[in-house]
Each structure stands twice: as structure tokens, then as C-alpha cells.
Amino acid sequence: MKEKLLVIVGPTAVGKTELSIDLALRFKGEIISGDSMQVYKGLNIGTAKIKPEEMRGVPHHLIDCYSPDHNFSVAEFQELATKKISEINSKGKLPIIVGGTGLYIKSVTHQYQFSTADKDEEYREKLIKFAKTHGNEVLHKKLAEIDPKTASKLHINDLKRVIRALEVYHATGKTFSQLLEEQKLETPYDLLMVGLTMDRTKLYDRINRRVDNMIEEGLIEEVKKLLELGYDERYNSMQGIGYKEIIKYLRGEITLEQAIHLIKQGTRRFAKRQLSWFRQMPEIHWFDMTDEQPEVKEKNLHNIYELIAGKFQFMKN
Image (cartoon, rainbow, N blue to C red; front, top):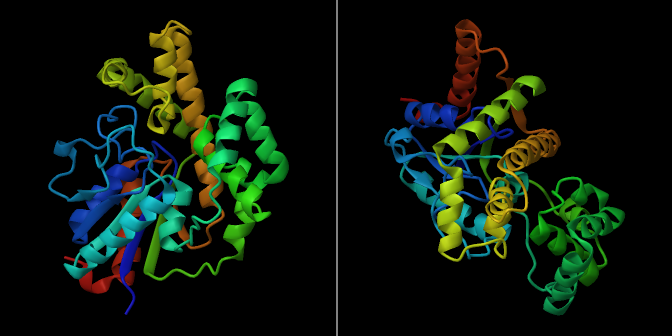
């Protein structure tokens, strides 16, 4: 019998966290973070990491696992999340992956096979030097010429994944997207995927307000502390949206106003890429959360409850 798995996806700021807590309490669930940045200790405000008091007693996994100098990878996430899914199922609970990092989510739901044989340290160093000399944008364009599908899903400053995609092509002669498409993408789970979406104007407004709240909550102080501990832009964790911009501000390269503008802009673009990624997954049952009138919100929640109860009947309280 296949292990059960519920996945909640959608763009940043759409309301995944609030819904996931509700569902975990209702359906005896435990939550696995599907966010590539929340595994890092000390990166709290900028990653919109859930606070302990907001968890309402629901166990959360793959949060605060590593120090910021750890080079966390999708293959590592796949291994850890897969183990957690089995552990949670063995307790008779429902594992709920919640997040917006598309490749991380799909690596688990469809068990991508990640090869280590195509690693080429010398070529990787060459690309790192190229990026330092010519800039991240030029390297990203290089990937776009070879593998436009993968490039469209990666931010210009996501240097680690841009380099990885180029490295795969260099070693195998096949693009990263081509290799993924060639795999047999059947899920090994009794899987249900719920996607949350929202009118773009409203979503962008929520993103802008979230960034303002992050500044008010102490994002600048959080980045200062991380820098004092020796964690700077050399590490992938500190290249995340919100961190790299505040580092530039603290170093006097840009004003605070410019940093906030860049964070909002980067987050909006990230949300757009998230939606593009998830729209390609036909398994997702989408729910539009734009209208927050009580009766509309209640109807949405009722439909989500019914969908999950129908799929995982024996788990409903």
C-alpha cells in the first residue's frame, strides 16, 4: 500500500502556512517544510519562517536543520523529506509538505533520480570565476541559450543552480530539463496536491506588505547578526531574497529604500516563477484565495476539507 502524502503549494504570501496548520489539526497531520531556505538556523524573518507559537502544537520538520554555511541541495532535501514521510505515516499521521520551491517539491512527489557522477569540480570553479568576472546575468544568459526551460525557472542570482544546470549539460551533453523529462515521473505516493492561487494584483500587494513587516520585525538586525557570525554572501543561504539586498545596504552600496524596493521586486518575480512551475503539474487541485469575504473563504475551506477527507477518509478526526 502506498504511503499517503498531502502537499500544499503556491506562491509566497498566498496563505499556505495558515491553511497547513488548520489542515494538520483537522486531519492529524505533521508538516514538512518544502522551502529551500527555512532549513537554515538564524534565517527567520527573511524566510517568513513560522514562529513556534504559531505552530499550535503541530510538529514541523526540516526547519532549522543547518547553519548558514551548509550547502543544502535538492538531493539532500529529497532524502530527508522521503524519510520523514515514512516516519509520519508509520505513526498513523498524515505528512503534509508545505512550500513553494517547485523543484524541491517535485523531487519528492515524483522521486527524481539525482546523479553524482556528472559532477565536475574543475568546470564548476571555471564557471564561478566566469560569474565573478562577467556577472551573474551573463552566466544566466549562457544557460538560457542551452536550456531555456530551466533558465526560465531560475533567478539570475541563483548562482548555485545556474552553475549546476550548466555543469550537468557539460558532463552529460543533455540539458537538466531534458534529463528530468526522460525520467519516469510516476509518484510513489498516495498523493494529493492542493494549490493556492490569488489575483496577481492582490498577491503583489500582500508581498509588498510582507516585506514592510519584515523590516519592522527586524530583518536588518537579523542580517547584521549573521554577518557578525561570519555568514556573508559567499554562502548560498545569504544569496536568498531579502538577505543579499540588506547586505548591500549595510555595506553602503545601496540605500535602505533601494534595498526594500529590490526585495519587493525580487519576491514578486519569484512568486511569478513559482506559479509558472506549479502550473505545469496537472496533479494539483487549485483554489483561488483572492476573495476573502467570510462566506467565500468558508466555501473554499469546505471544498478543501472535502477533497482531503475523500482522499484520506480514515484520517479525519
